[in-house]
Amino acid sequence: MSIHHLEEISSGCGNRVSLSIRWNSARLVVHLDPSPVGNMMEDSLTEQYNAACIAEDYDEEEAMSHQILDAIVEAGRPTFDQLASPPALGSSTSSDLHSLLFPEEYSFRFRTLNNRTELTLRDGQSHGTASDIAPQNGWALEPSEHPFHLRIGDDTNLPKFSTKDICVLQKLLGDGYIARVLVGGQEMCSKVGDDLRADSAQRELSTLLKISTSQYAGILRVPKLLGLVQTPDDGRVIGFLEEYIPSSDAPGLSSLGDIETALSIAEVRRKKWASQVQETVHLLHQIGVTWGDGKASNVLINCDTDDAWIVDFGGGWTDGWVEPELSGTVEGDELAVKKILEFLEV
Image 1 (cartoon, rainbow, N blue to C red):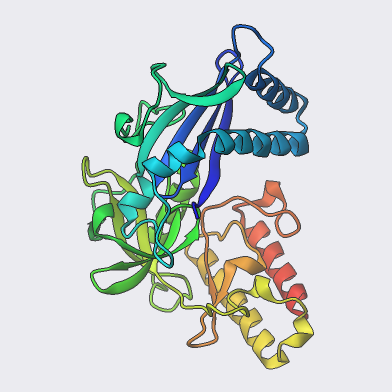
Image 2 (cartoon, rainbow, N blue to C red; image 1 turned 90 degrees about the horizontal axis):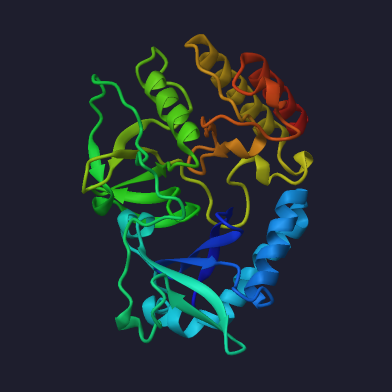
């Protein structure tokens, strides 16, 4: 069975709608352009999607995204499966971080011809078989003139690891954005940024670097920075490696956010976690660092020690926890801690 999902959808450039679709181990970029006659399926799909975008009707926009994806999958499934065959039962679609982050990419045009929907290459040739289609590594919906990279100081002496030398054990968020990995025989957590997450990734790296050189580096319950992730071709730093906080794989308690009712947890544990969160945030403020997006789900519970660890220093805010205008401030952190204590009923 093929595994696929929509990574990104964008519109513009003469009402064109473009989709980036992850299909097994490959990425498919599919364009829908208005037809010359104006009454084909692609016209209806693009018009409805663009109308929803203009009206800021997010529910309709999402519904149309799924409808367009379904139409593409119906028309292209046989070809897509030739290009990127389904993984064998029980296997992973990739074994290293590089193949996960930089899959082979194929670009198509979706159109209606002779009352049938079909997919053609961007140059207009018939797609034929999979062997006729050349992969286009590095192509994106909107290629950037300045490839993403993280800024690091000249005095940063962290080891650097190529994406090809990082083995992925488990995808934690997105296709490689956050993953549990194995590097040199050591289990770590890998976090990688891109153009869309540039500010978040830079903030988290800068914060972790500051923590690592502080007087509290050895006692803070915050993942320790272990290395940098770089591309093998040009050596760009696109991410970092940090200490992996072991949590239960079984349904249960991996973070405070998993708690359904506070009273289901023994009071002594809840009080310990509350005290640890308070202490950690207090020490962070002592060294001029703020948490940012403080909330229950950003407090992991180490399954080996049953201690509360604070994670995610990428900034931002979450409705119900931190007000947007207080994100990244001491006041915002204090509000988040207060709500966590209320959440734990201590």
